[in-house]
Length: 445
Image (cartoon, rainbow, N blue to C red; front, side):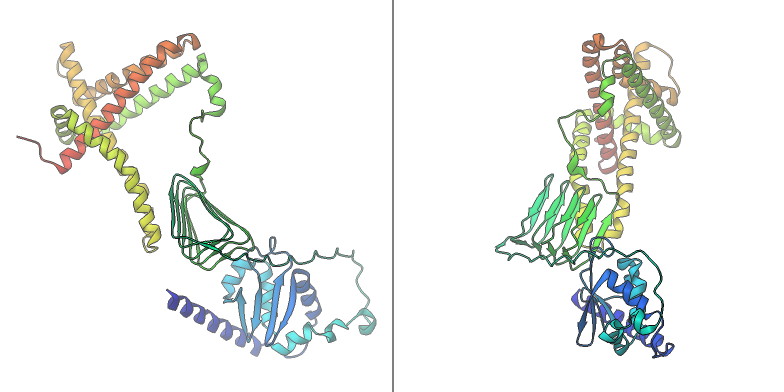
């Protein structure tokens, strides 16, 4: 890894030297009429410090024009940002509009740069040149540059910090190896010699933070103080959603809680449940159309071993999320597995498809039982599945209908709602377990 970084840095430095030499051959060695304007623009944004074989530029406003950049060195035809050689594309990426000024300054040779910022250039005034200055409003003097923040000594050292469902804080006087947080945030105020990995949370670097390797944020946010040091790369994957901000034990619905117990709230809940019923009927009909034999096989397995299927389905639900989190962590930590993170949504979609197939099989069996109890003639498989879905969801539908009556009927609707949720959960769980048993196990003779 170190050899590869040195090789990339050497190639970038060589490319910068070649480009600079090519530009020099096409430029004259005389003074440019716009040299004074270039000097004023540079000094307006940077503090110029002479070096033995070049110049160093320190941003006067590091938090605004060039966030996260402490110094820019121009030595021997090479441009380096914070000591690391940079190409033209990297300059434009990190410096923005200031990159053109730095490139123009790099086209000058060492003698021209020294003359530009030396006393000879400073003595060129309107009186000595005979030029009449243009009338312009005086610019306010720039604020003094912010002094470098001294870093406290790292008096405490510890091993890796791994936290699931919580946050990790590295104090300013502390040094740790690696930080891995799942469903929480990492507040780095001290030193992390290795990697920082956060899934579903916030990574915040304080002014004394020093990260020796990469920072990876999956589905979270990243905040960095301009004085913080990151020696590796910052990888952000997915939208910035922090799971650490969730508050359990409170109503998460906001203004919708005002509709609870009202007629309009009950009507909205009833229509939502009815829409869910229609969607499930459409999906189940498509599944029966594509694989009726497979649905009948799963239905028979669920009817023959409902307890075993339910246990397998419940176990699959318990293990899916931890296995998914472990897989994401392994992909992120190994770095080479980061491209495979795009497959994670397909894994979740596959589990949802298995749930729907299993629920369809259970609903098919329930529909056949209901038709047999009513003594009706055998129905076609599509209508049988729809009847089964209606029977499974009937307690919830009845509770939603009662809820339209308002707050006075809520005590009657809540028990039915609870029974309906339990019935649906059992149907979904048994169906998932039956799918797993059919796929990975052989039915008993």
